[in-house]
Length: 574
Image (cartoon, rainbow, N blue to C red):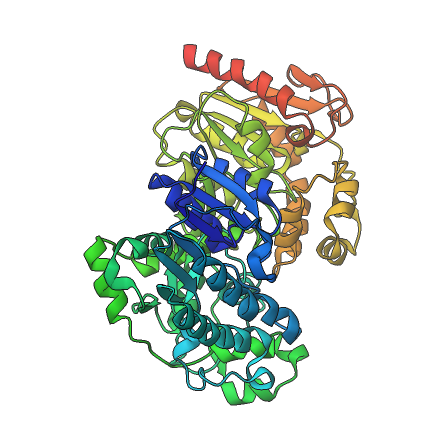
């Protein structure tokens, strides 16, 4: 299949999104990857992109000819080079191989295409900074210096060969899957480790969204006036760094630092203290950039940037959903919402869910994802305040649950696990008209208080220091990757303390909850694993899942879902 366009670096964050945009525009696209072609096609499938017009080819831009047969891709008109080696602390030779030599090789390869219309090269917004025309590897570091050298080399070689070239200079490109650069600072803020802001009050770290950026890139070859032009792509409305951090802190429900460290001092402090790579400090600047030509071109194409404050909040949701690249994000919709007095991590349908899932400890709302994927109606789940990704609680869990369910218009099946069985039971007592049925899975108040979390004086430091594999073993769970998320959350400031305190406090409520179980008027179902029996059997009829322990929703999601579906059907028939 002949390709109209080829994208080098198609497996990267920008490259894969550009491939998706070109395919959506109906183009025949060759995605050139060094490796990982299967990862690209899986990602495109997850984005529901039709890959019928896609060809994946393997290329190595560090080699003259790119490692491609001479006659391959002879019909290509548009060549996009999104390939780059981005890392701090690189060896200069490693950086130059891709960012300088590789960029020139792409120009030379493109010059031999008989139908070439345009080469679009991705550089960077710091090309406008002082000294950009004289890269210094000792001063700038290998990444920044190689990008500057590559920018000049690409332009020079394109002039020599008469290649029509357009250069796009983006700032930090934000969107789902972007976990480097500014994302590192957001990660420190999220974990409670950002004690002070780097630089002064006027530091400007501009952003541009990935969707806008790739639409701009895809439009460039279609307009003759973009040939031999350079465009700076960034959102001029990006808040200065202190305001940007404050915006994200408020959204995520964490505390923003009030102090800052002057850039000059920051450069002199040891890396062990600053936790910042010296190369990253070159991006801390008050510089502004001329975006007029990019804005004019975008207007002519009908492109409009999304509101930057909303884009930043959405990106923060994406970062936290994936624990900054440690886990795969859950199915959207997800994100931080205000629930009563608390910033809360919420996933799913808050309007008319068929099921509402409440998690136990020390896991989070994602522990219900395997079951939610198997039931027959929409679902709502949230991290309890103080746990998982939610902010520390300002209200009781009972008041929080009432606020969470206030917008719900359906009568869902309320499904709670372990610790959350208490708040769920009390809600059903207060609001029986709003609950179709109540399902208590491994209810902690009916089981022996035998957990080491209840007994050990070292529970907090042990819990905070556990690896995902060790935590899985202590909970009787397979180490399948899920616990990477909860483990990352437990290392946030105060998180492990809150988990242990909540479990110990709940122990004192066991008698009251056992009494309440006999007064609830909505249908109640108990579900336990055969390896995690109730302390007082016979309280109510119990569904026992064979071979399951305390977390059947994780180990036996098919069995749990098969039980829940008829519960909802019976509730709907009432």
